[in-house]
Amino acid sequence: MKKFNRFWNKLRHFILPTTRFLLLIAFSCTLVVTFFLASSTAQLTQQPQSSADIGWEFEGSQELNKGSIQEIEYEGECPGKDSRSIKAWFTSSKTPPAPKRRVIVKNVTRGLESNPYPYTDREYQKGKSSESTQIIFGTSHRGSNFIVMESENEFQYEIKENKTVIDSGSFIAVIDKELDVRRRDATVTKNSVCFNSAVDLNVCADIRNKTEYTCPNNKILRSIVEPNNPEITTIISNQMFGDVVYVLNGNIYTLRPGEEKRYTAGSLSIQFNSTCPVGCKPKTPPQSLQPGKRYQFKSSSGFIQLVDFPK
Image (cartoon, rainbow, N blue to C red; front, side, top):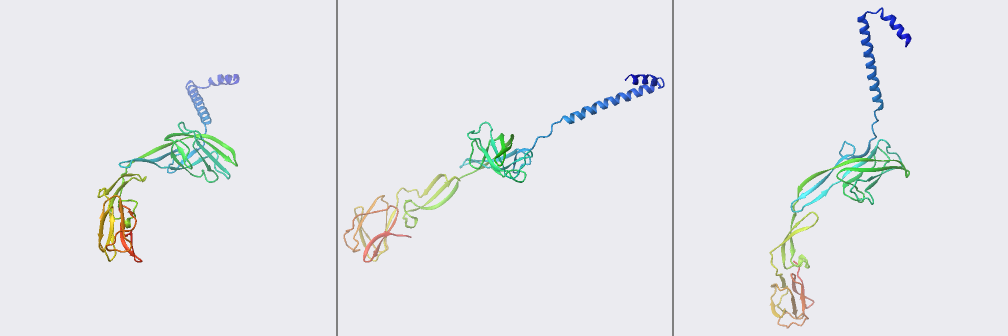
């Protein structure tokens, strides 16, 4: 430094004042530029490296750890909710898939059932991510579906190779709810039914029109039967060539060939003579009839029988 000062003292006698001023300015600028370049280089050197990409890749989303699940809210006669699911894959640029690897991911978000926490255990052996898992909204572990809550979720993961944990950590993912409001009314169905449901339709004497209003969960909102008459009809017909005399609930009736009679009493008891159709007093024991059914007198092997009368 002393040598530089002696050299400078000798040199400045030969340099004009203006020139010395310009040289001093140039030297100062050089020092300033050198200082800023050194500072910028240090800042660039000290910048942290970008963190690894770890978390969920959601179907249809180009952003890691960002997805949405559709929920349908029904209004109208059949209100309710229908929460859908979304497919997702675990990925890690730090520890990518390799043979004999699996990944276990737990959802440890506050507000979820913790015994156990919702979890998924997936293969992590090929490609750039794990095998897929179906993610749904909920609060507790449920079968093969992975449970999440709306908005921000905290996850913990372990990557195993041959049952040995080779990497673990945590990450945050945000799952939004995509609400779709729809109107849902009951489905209307119309059928012909027997007023006495215990009687088959092909032998029913009292067929009515039934209109049902049903929700998708098979819940019947209302059922209308027309005509709305509380009395039930029972039919007795004579399909033989001669008259038939019978006693019904204590009253004697004669039924000619091809004729039928309708009765609306709820309880019917009948007696008749099975060996002759005309003028014979009833000898058979009382027989109870099923309300709402079609019956016929029919001859078989010389005997009279009262049997079902299909249409």
